[in-house]
Image 1 (cartoon, one colour):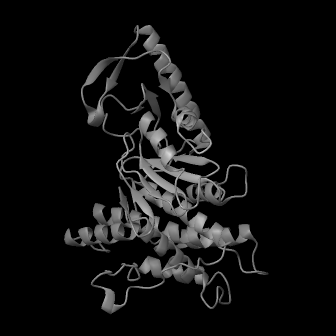
Image 2 (cartoon, rainbow, N blue to C red):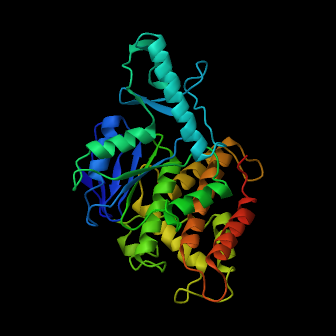
Image 3 (cartoon, helix red, strand yellow):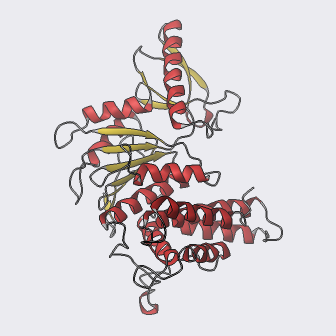
Length: 378
């Protein structure tokens, strides 16, 4: 087991690759789990300084159809291109879950027709093999999480769970509707929104940047909820002092990137006067975002990813006037970072007497849309 200074716990978890647990704000991150892995993660989320949660909200970001067969997850793929996901990004979450229920029914029907056999493809497009499958051993991801809560060893014996489907892709920038859906899930006031007493687990493909992005959003929401919508008192607000850089390297705050500076200024201009003790909306939002990003360095550090991709594009000879595929990939990462700054801005209270909460959030998204049009991601 490895514990970091920012209360993240990393340890090997059978069936749950890449599991990271932020014990300070009840947030977890994991790649696609087996049924056993789901149970282990639910048990692990019961521990931490904040005490056991009232419920574990499992957020699945997978944008393709997944079904569990004999405790292992299988994604529906094209037989001619098994290594390429068949993403359903345009399908609403409810439709995606209904398609997974239909897929489960089709699998069960095929198992019955083939006398308990099913043709399954191994990882990475391995050769198709006929496998013995028992009737009743096929489940949807939502059913696996629900069953895992009944079997996991919680403080009260049963771990209460809630499954949420939020199909997102790391290959494309988040759309405005994606940001709104994420905000509603982790910050909204509806019955499905995350509460301070609940824990959240973000599950996606292994190493997907979007999973770190959503974990950061959930972590920021929990921090802002604890501070009642005000600036958290434990923010690290600057680069390390020169004398300490031997032990604390520069954070790389992306201040040299034009779109970052433009977006911070656009957020500052939403209100006509300073707030938050002399700091403007853009300044505070970037501080909250950067501090939370540094707490979530695994599996993908969003700012470092932007710098690494930008450097790779420059080494390949790509320029702003002649962008290539590496530049566009770096721009997608940059836009994902700006989305997190926008998210931090939407979590803050609007300035009294100037805007309502919906008006405040709309103004932030409008500013994001304007700056995003200057970033070439296609």
